Figure 1 (tube, rainbow, N blue to C red):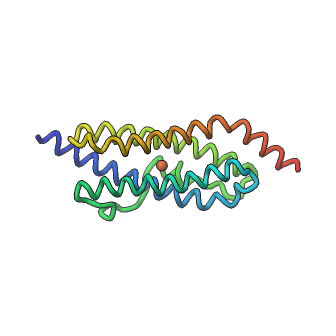
Figure 2 (tube, rainbow, N blue to C red):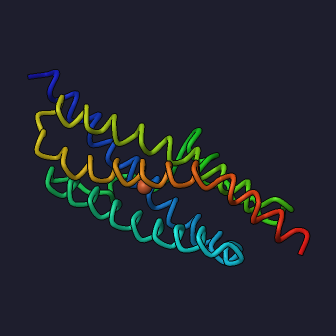
Length: 165
Ligand SMILES: [Fe+2]
């Protein structure tokens, strides 16, 4: 019994932390979007990413509410390594767009891991019914991570094209 209580506590903290990450992503993407306009495919994908992050944050809200708690208990603060990754806006650098794409790839890897962890915690906390929402978000993170990885060479070429234009 005690184990499940501990697991629930860790699980709810994890949900709040991931909510803070999604919130941070929405702000970061918003800041970067304008400078991605010369790269239409990336621009469209990042716009969709912002909307998806909003949906993912809402799913986390729903799960927290279901467990009788809310995100308001959490400081919406991203700490540690993820702040470095999520808050990475390389404003003004020549190769800003490339750096931001690299940061986004790192962030997606973090988020995939985070949802995977939450899925394991949901089980341990006796809330397996939460898993389908978490799996949905994890799949979206994977899809975006794959897209960024696959399109990185193309983006490099597009960037070089912009530079020599
Ligand atoms: Fe996300």
